[in-house]
Image 1 (cartoon, helix red, strand yellow):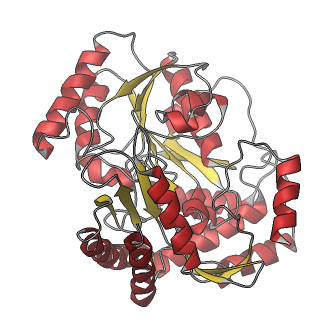
Image 2 (image 1 turned 90 degrees about the vertical axis):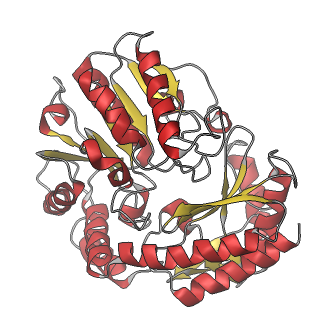
Length: 427
């Protein structure tokens, strides 16, 4: 049945639509931190639909909210008042950390970043954008144009002039040998030099932890130091929180808070986890920025009632059960467990991350050369052992991405680590 579905997939869908595994997997249902495939095999899910199933599969509060809302009305567009949309916007504005916040809902992180770029370039009247090397911001024309990861950038054409800044990757590149303080100083000096050679940019867009790039991040405080330079020149800071938001990093509710010394971002984008699998994205910005557009706009499907009901139920569950705290506690145990394994596996260059956002970088033993074949082999072995993980990386890196739902238990963390250890030891 799966082979037949795969053949149908190949005959009607694009060749560039990526699939995991030599024999692709059809997931039919899930519960908690587990999913099942069409052959009845059970897996511990450490990737959560690409960090999207944030709380749990089939979370009762979310399924109930979706069912009840669908029984009333599913959709009406933003041309009409929408109570669930207003209620979720109020909650998000409150937890955003942005003063006088306004919230606009989209259907994805790509669309959220598109909107943020529209706001920033319109507000600043500039189409120059600063982005981070190794970054990923989506698959639309404008977001591909600012993505600093060649594997996910199929064209160099763009409506924007993009300039790339150092700092998103701590352990590679020309500043990797420096200590954290000197690393930040060098990146700030690079930014200041770059700004001396270009017309005034609209904004810097940055992921606090680079997701597709392999869960890399700078030392805490880098973006705070950047913000001081940007603020002096009126340049906006956009924090792409599509993967880091809602407490996944454990230590903070938003990834930018590790860099909050100089104040919050001007714009925050979000998606993925807030809908727990439903299609929800959005933008938070100060009112003066959000309201800068001088033409009408709507969102046909952004903010639709059934997805807003899901997002509100999911956010309430997250806050009431302190899943951020659970990500900190269980994620810390999982990172230390994987680091202990890594010390005995020559292919593992580094285990990094925070909370339940963990990267395991693989290289050819004794070198810094990427080992993509090893990453694919571990992915297959982990699946065979009953564990699903992701892959990522950029510019000659290969990384396993570990990002379970935030309700992961200690027992499940131990189980997943043991399966991943066995898979790594087969290399």
